[in-house]
Amino acid sequence: MALMAVNAQAQDPEIIDKVIAVVGERVVLYSDIEEQIDQMTMSEIPVTENSRCEVLEDQMYQKLFVERAIEDSITVGDDMVEQELDRRLRYFIAQIGSEEELIKFYGKTIDEIKEDFRDEVKDLLLIQQMQQHVVGDVKVSPAEVREFFADIPEDSVPYINSEVMLAQLVRMPPVSEEEKTAIKNKLNGFKDRVAAGEEFGTLAYLYSQDPGSALKNGELGFMDRTELVSEFSSAAMGLQKGEVSEIVETQFGYHIIQMIDRKGDRLNVRHILIIPQVSASDLQNAKVYLDSLKNVIETNDTLTFERMAIAFSDDKDTRMNGGIMINPQDATNKFDFEVLGKMDRQLLFNVEKKEVGDLIGPDLYQTQDGKRAYRVVKIVEMTEPHVANLRDDYHRIQEGAKRKKENIELETWIQKHRNSAYVWVSDEFNSCPFKTKWVMAQR
Image (cartoon, rainbow, N blue to C red):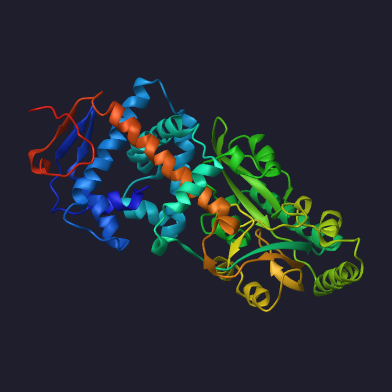
């Protein structure tokens, strides 16, 4: 959550930390409040005279959830904590630029950084588990959705941007046998050089085509085997420390892998990736192939785009769904025009000029794993910008109604359990207009 912000606050010599609240056996520190106020300021969220009180009470709620989770024997396993720590570290490494920069920023090793935040992450996971325990059975009926929408003031009904549903038919140009042989010869050559005494990491730095790991001598950092594609993890799990794998083919290309360390199902490896290149003629053949399929779709009423995608598309993630594309931001099949523009400006430009049912392409594009391919895209549905309404936006409104009902459940739970733990708040916050009537202990 706040790996960077906590450190920034810790580096400020002006802040003298102190306990300002206690819930059960857990404390709220002055620095906890100031950290969130700093984050609000950086995010341009207005800070009012009551903001510190609101932040403090939110912190007290979180401590109460943790206390009750422990009381109710709700637990999170060490593996869950480790996975969440790894996920957060990967995010911040991506933000700061490299693992070395993160280590430099903190002045600590990766393991030391993780240890500093282990308790915090465990508490956050406990809070999530406890809240899910409280609201897990919450559902909303159609009548509740209509009532929720009717209660929204007329001038507050949200404005919905244009959205589009798209389907794609993809052709991946095949890699020639000559290219595959050349790559395997190159990787076997690297294996021979390692066996002769050269450092695997140096070769990865010089030759690997994985931009995320090459600058780190091919090292991926500790990851759970489930976070890696199956072919890669299966090969890696069979290695001893220092051992180099045979050549492994995945959706990303061809690899050789060296084991650095392993802890159960978590492993840290180096790898060298070589990505196959397709020739210009193979790309042109892919375009011609899709042109012919597009012509069949446009001239034959029975061979629909959906059937052709299932039969002929090379994209395994969309093929069996008739080519329907998934928005990676929210896992729905709708793309807000603004989101689509950030993902693929050229596709947005083409969509804006077309109508529902029109086919776009074939156009060259880059797949999520960095390969070049051609695709034909169909506009399945498209909405005009509009004020939200139940007919067109029922699912969105239903989610809003569900969130409101969940919040009511959480508030009810808090009122029920607010006095189940020892609560103390520093005198300087006695005048806070708390929403909950806490029974305060005296000191």
